[in-house]
Image (cartoon, rainbow, N blue to C red):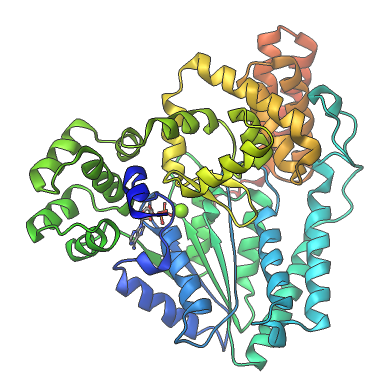
Length: 501
Ligand SMILES: Nc1ncnc2c1ncn2[C@@H]1O[C@H](COP(=O)(O)OP(=O)(O)O)[C@@H](O)[C@H]1O
Ligand SMILES: [Mg+2]
């Protein structure tokens, strides 16, 4: 991107590239020190902090420093991200395996990772991860209409959790053995584990408990507002297991000066930096402030910044208002989708066809508010922007966009690889579009399947959608069935709550 374009768009809200990463020196040293300890025994670390504080950027820097830094010995890094679509089973773990498979055949790591044993362990673990999720997915090609989905689900589960865990554990042991043998450490990086569904949390926690030598596991986690007891329990377990934590706080004034200089080419006084440290601190808000100043042609003084913040306290709103108008339109039209966004669905939402789809992808690549994911899908550059766009949608627009999204998924599902993502997306879009007949059937059916897969949180929220749908339809038989299913799930959840000792 040339400089003129970049200033029109603003600096991207995506996780920062390693060469623009500023400050955080203590945190970086701590991570590297923990990494260097992973030879004798496996080492895990949790990077924590609120949205926009810089967790994903720190993970980017870590990946670069461990794997790509020209002056350091290189360690293979495998990484994945958990997205905000409850119910996705093991998709982040499968992403990790995909990276590992890539390394095993790469010129750089083939010599240490390319053994037949390693490749076989990857194949086996991947097969089990896929099979575990299969019972909640339909068999074969998805039919085109939502209502036809019911009845074509796979048979009862064949792979139990213990086998999945064992296969993953054996894979890590093989990886660790190869690493220790060649004097390396493999780094496994997982972003946003607070969004992980129950089976993924379980696999993560079990993996942490028995991390083999030669493996370094760094994951990021964002404290939720206490509304999610599952998250709180997970964080407690992580602490109980003695996993060290690298908490991220607001940036200090010297770090803020570095950000403004390196990323925005702005020199700010130490007084302004101290004011920003006090008033803003997190790098997402800083980016929104500096982009807005640039957009409005204002000097970066404490006075101007104070004015901005007095008029708008939500940094995502500041960021959004400083975007070129056509990006605002695209953001609104795409915000109802669940990440990762498949290209055919985005194109359908924005009404692009043929060659224009390539054009759309080129534009997205340049944008400050979308980012391209390693698998070729897209997401908002930062989840705070997507949340903001969703919040400001009027009720009518929300219904219409969800109806369009459901239609787009139904049209393109034969071209989409992620069947579970398609099903869960459809279940939410149909419900939010108030297409209650289709929504009730699909959510109820998926609900019971998640119950059998022991993901009770997802099962409950899907079933609750079915209940609301049945109520709106005035269908008493359906309502009774959905309420029965909800009671079954609630009983199960209650029986799992540990008695107070
Ligand atoms: N150390 C840093 N230096 C420069 N920019 C940063 C830094 N950390 C984060 N940012 C920027 O701040 C924003 C939020 O960072 P991100 O890593 O996505 O936060 P989180 O993952 O905690 O939500 C991004 O736009 C990113 O580019
Ligand atoms: Mg992040």
